[in-house]
Image (cartoon, rainbow, N blue to C red; front, side):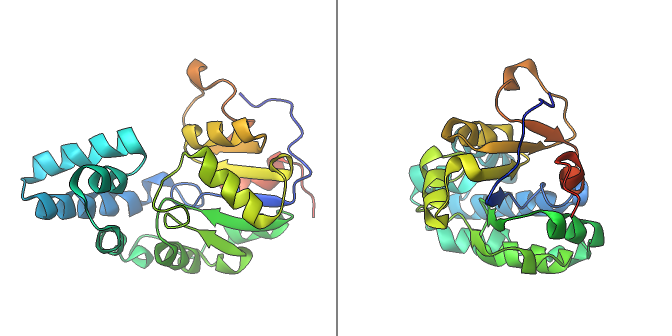
Length: 222
């Protein structure tokens, strides 16, 4: 549902990284999933099938596989994070001038909020040619490896930026993450090719298939 809500003005845009700034079918997540499964298998001494089932189970229950591994198996996070994000993203993505222009036209301060790590975010943004648009990257380490969706983490981020939720725009490819933002009073944009299930009513304000269309949808002319 694209509602007739005024998403402007805002002082801060909190933008997700993976599957939001680039297409979900790029292969980036497929590589990360493969590395996660291998890491879990090696860490727990289980076969690939069992490891893949755990990877999915923990992701669904906790928001990230990492969180489940930390809670249930006492895994140290940094080794896992660096390993699974070592995917040579430059082989899968390229400079995106249209994305650069969309970000250039988007007003206000822009930050990244990701369940990945800063180093991965920087590599992706550099490959896309848009790193210079972002003032700060808030990664999974920001709130002790607690992943999105988390109302406390998002509230901490907005407070750290010195703005009010009502003056904040949150852009994400996961409707659950936007539900948290909506609860805080933020304006929200869901980036997804999916249709809007009835159960997602009220979780976001605007739905677009691509971030590239955002400034046009918001009627930003600059």
